[in-house]
Figure 1 (tube, rainbow, N blue to C red):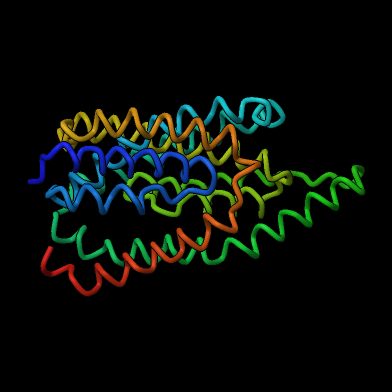
Figure 2 (figure 1 turned 90 degrees about the vertical axis):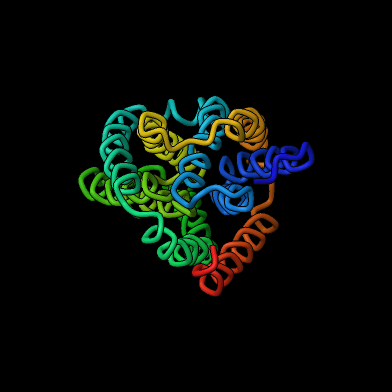
Length: 264
């Protein structure tokens, strides 16, 4: 395995960027997971280490959304409970699977994540229309459809526990379609949901001894910094730059793993 100081800096940079991207749009796993595979980790261990390393960045980004979360406190506990169940089921499925089976799924998982980002433009425009309508017609405030929301989040958080790349956009879609209107509030709830599901997955991976700690500690610190910076500057970071980058990276990685999965 590569253990040079330069490579540790490379992993720290990948985690820093991953934390920032996760807090704004999701997709940090597109950056950190391939870097850990490059370090020589087995696929399941790379995914587990990636999940644990990126989690502090998600947690610190909650602080950046604290004002927006106050507007939807009645939703926070139900969505967190669903995230616990889904995250636990997904992470246990990963740990009890084989390295070969997971690696064969990786290109499809990257393809799913990249596709969700490719569809993010229409979703953003839809949310902007909702925001405009709710501002112009406050008497038409939409009711949140709780049961459909929780069922969709159960499936999404299962995916988060298993892999999770691109799940931020899936979560935002579910929140928007089920009645949460304002983009800032959607981002805040998305962060709570993904952070909770990944927290459960982290506990599962740690107790299952699937984490490579010699890389993980340093990446956790870098990601925490990136997550907080991203959340505090979410309104100033243009997704016109981030989204094409994440989409291209996701599809590029999907193609790479389709072509090379037998050799990894």
